[in-house]
Image (cartoon, rainbow, N blue to C red; front, side):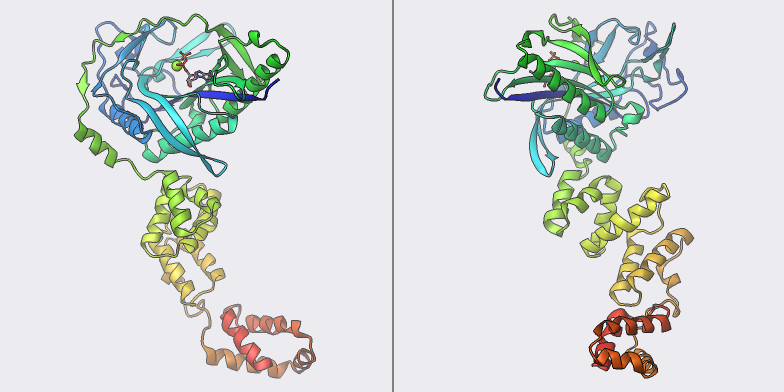
Length: 475
Ligand code: ADP
Ligand code: MG
């Protein structure tokens, strides 16, 4: 059998952040208590009408621009009809004819290499309610009904689970950077449908695709893709490729396999038509321009900036851009002229270590970039050692004081050459045996003398200066 290539396309659903739902005034907030964020329209009461949430449209347009999609001239919605208990209206308001974005392309990084990802479309829609099934009962929670959802559909352009997951992680970070969504998989805010097929390496003809619906973790996406590639490849090897049917499956976490739900050969007819209760309206160039200005510089652009223009390693740059607040902090440090590597070292080790250990965010800590600058300046001037700086770092945060408040004459490094010369002469005078052995060739005794100086100054002697004077006096 010829070598097989996997072909994967993703449908990524992400719940947006907003005060109210996309077509109703009910609150859009994650809530443990069921059925408290509800307006009459979310339950399809007669006589209710949808009202479009402008912020959701704005965010959807921003996302469309980020993905380099084409935006439509007019914004409007379609009804997608199907019956299910979590959909009381009997239809979902979505976009089919003119989505908020089509034909996009972005680059993502997979194992330190850039690959292109092609976007079929991105559309704004409402989420359905959520159902919970128990032994002999099912319950329904309408809190989620009408929550704004962006559905992003890629072309079948991925060839491994790693690429697919890298894309989802990339998009999750984009959503967070823009503040458009919390993009929290633990709260069920990201759900994916994964489409997988295999084909002969040299063939242009795509194989039969299998859709795995509603996978709600990135680990699950990876496992489901690998499982399907293996299942389809094995069937093909056995000459049973005809058994790979165009069907919808689901990922079962327990048994770690995909399980058939239904055939997809006869596509469901959703009887789409334009939602008549929401008037079409024009998206002006001016509005798009305004929205574009609100898009922050995104993580990948920042990362390559840090690597190419500030000499950081890929590893460090990756850590710095992981969250926008951290990257902003780093850039604030650069503006204050803290040397890039110094700032990066402080952030990736000291600061992140501290905030992780204490469950804080970088915005919470008292050590602002300006205070870090004070600290770094004192090290550079030789006033304090880096060991002392680390101690002062913690004190500034804990006691919420200025760096200078911890620089007493007692803590300052001894940089006075005269003082050190006197001290070293004293030590040499009191260690005749060691001096003799040193001169006889036991040069590793040098560290003994350094140790004596440090002991006598309680670690405050400037180490460079100490070594310089010792070398001079001993030789
Ligand atoms: P459907 O009509 O079944 O929803 P679409 O053609 O609209 O199918 O595609 C839905 C998703 O399936 C898209 O993400 C697309 O990239 C992906 N897809 C389409 N064909 C294939 C294929 N042969 N293998 C893998 N994924 C595919
Ligand atoms: Mg779909």
